[in-house]
Image (cartoon, rainbow, N blue to C red; front, side):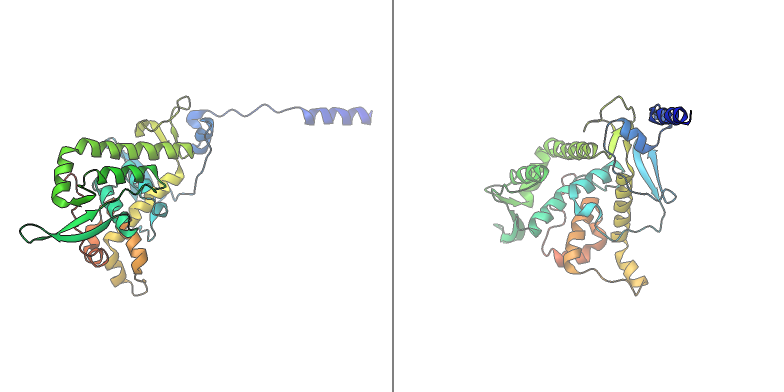
Length: 288
């Protein structure tokens, strides 16, 4: 009899329990992402300090006023920073990406800058491109080809650049849109973005109001906002806190690339001019 009882208990234990069913509307972010068959990568976010609201059809972060971030966000990935900053309405001007790329190429010697005299004896800055094709990023390769196409025999002056941008604003804006779509698709593939409707697959052209942004992206957006504030107030921060260490030149050089994407380099113009000597700050402003 005991044997029969034990056998019945074993049968009960082996019976499969019905799967738990989650209502998508009531599910957590991670569960909604999983329901879209998308891998989930999230980091903890201090939700008491960070809020995401919609303002004039755009997403906006609400972060504590005293929040600063003193490292390059997104590991310095300019295209990632550009996409996230645009998504959360943190960009000053979309054309600032071009300036950051030019500075990157100058830093890495993919572009060189010299000064030459005009027919009237005035010294002007001139950028020298080449037929370099070794970029790892397809977006960077496209940007290099786009800007070098504005040159004459790989030489580009401000005057020629201004003429080219006035004639090719549509082409420039198409490139910016291409960057945003490419980065959105990348984050969709990484499981950090999905559609609110679990039956719809998100793409690079899906509108932001139809999407769910994972915690890791929101945290990156918060860091970008904190970094922007940090750069704007860097001198005041250092002067008000004697224990703050001044940034070394090489790190600062990298920080300025991020600051340029975000359009906050003006706040550190003096240091910028010391590191990027003779660089014409408004060289690449396509919409000014």
